[in-house]
Amino acid sequence: ACDDYRLANSREGVDVIDTDPAEMCNSSYLTKSDNSSSCFRGASWKTVKLKCLPCYSLAARPSMDPAASYTGDLDFDLDVGMTLKLNVSGSETIFNHVWLILPNQDVVYLLSLRWDYPNIGLYTIIFNTRQGNAWGAEFRTDFTPNSSDNYVIGISITETSFLTYVDGTLWMTNPIRIPLSGVRRIDFDGFTAVNEFNIGKGMC
Image 1 (cartoon, helix red, strand yellow):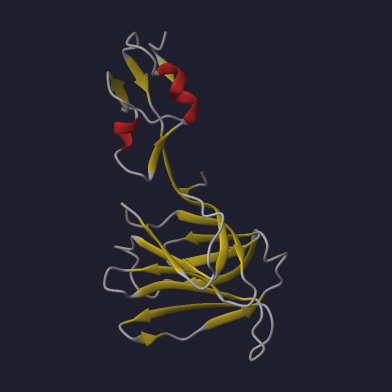
Image 2 (cartoon, one colour):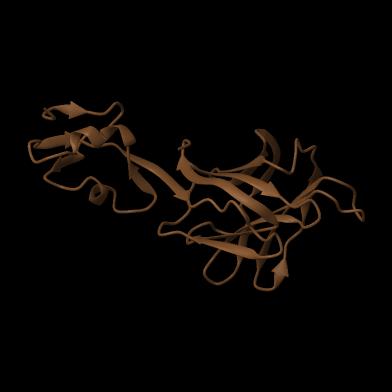
């Protein structure tokens, strides 16, 4: 029943012959399309066109200590064209941070959302980088959050820039100062929950 079966938008040349579909993508970043499962039951099928979706999901953390740091280690490099989407809940008294870090500890991207910071004003977003022990020049702007209880951070990577969104609004466009190649670690802190965390080309 699965002969000539093809998923919409599948890539040519991805033929599966008596192979577990999970083995075809070979990375936590690539996953099989959910609606292919009905064609991988029993031993009657022969060839199936499989769509590998470029998408990674980190396990949700419904309860977090905002004073603690959490790390997501990837088995693929971040790259141009990827978008990181974090559906989070944040502490208003502790800065909400997202870090993209190289193996040598250089910080390629730091996002700091500061809900309550009397010294510089309320509701400020800061972008920065760190090479060695030296921080770069901060880029900061004011933002108007919908709520700290549940909001969405989006980070899109272009050839030259990081585009940072909060709740769908573009708040910052920042140059890539340090080469992105080799980033496989994402740290985050200041959150009380991470409800969803995806990385995709296009969105998952």
